[in-house]
Length: 411
Ligand code: ATP
Ligand code: MG
Image 1: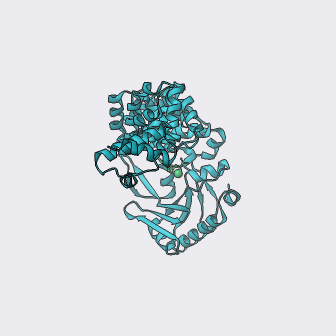
Image 2 (image 1 turned 90 degrees about the vertical axis):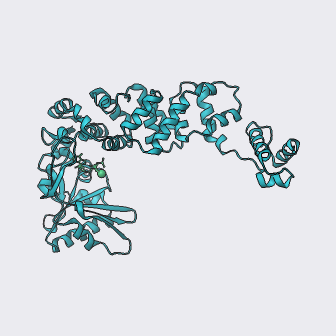
């Protein structure tokens, strides 16, 4: 099969030209270049994907070096891994020398040696990700599909390449579910059996690698689907006994997406998945996933705030009290509570803080107060605080109001 028309249709002309230049240069060096992985899968699905991975039969670093040098090209190489990245302003190309991988023990990183395209495809996770498109001028755009990934794409199946696949690398359990749910596919029958058989292999994977795959899931368009499926398969429990993937999650993830301006959706999702935890369980999860400082802080804040929400559950609570309670919490943790809480009153207070209260500033600052004759020192701090409180509660509005209040507070 030849994919020339799909390449034309789904890749911008500029990218196609570049691929042609690369393959011609490779040809001069006696090397062969192929597009591999996700982009080939997505071309066959009729979807654009500018995340371009190239495999080079030969030395990818040398080829990349020959392509670099243009004014806008940025080159980063990792000679030890035989990989290079060429950056062209708004997009980049990942190039890797074809390699063979062998797994010394389950879950360990593989041992790598140079290989052919066929070796490189045989180390991959699923048939639909183990296809390539030849870019060499002679066989331009020919599909190379040793495991019938195209057939599996047509039948909507996620299939591993061999029966040890999940044992070698159990992150593939998470990846299988991610693609299954993203594409609306199913696990092929034998693959499903192997996945369930090998589910305990998730225990062989380092926290960092588990976290990375979890982050990829939380970056999907509808992550709740994969989260629920992992729950159903018993995989979520193996990642951490604290995580949940039930219907509540699906409903709240939907709510989170509907929020206007919900930035940092993945970290919001993580708080929701972990929302039922108490403080100690939260700390366990943070250790278990080796969460980086910033996400750990968001999660800690979200769980701590959960314990204080009843203070916001009264319609009469003053705006300054809402401010005092919330201003130390990370905004993403506040947002998580606004999505997770069942109290409409608490939610509207959380949202009021995020939308308005956190930005409230007084017109007068320390310097202007000193201009009014208030001496520097702790008294000045107290006056500033009182002005801010009065502004939040609507007791002062204009600069004039603030000046009058400040003078009345003058010691
Ligand atoms: P996505 O659309 O999610 O980015 P992708 O196919 O580009 O999909 P990547 O995670 O970017 O996925 O990986 C690129 C390719 O590397 C995959 O298509 C797959 O062939 C291979 N790959 C990635 N992770 C593994 C793994 N754990 N085991 C085997 N092959 C893998
Ligand atoms: Mg990719």
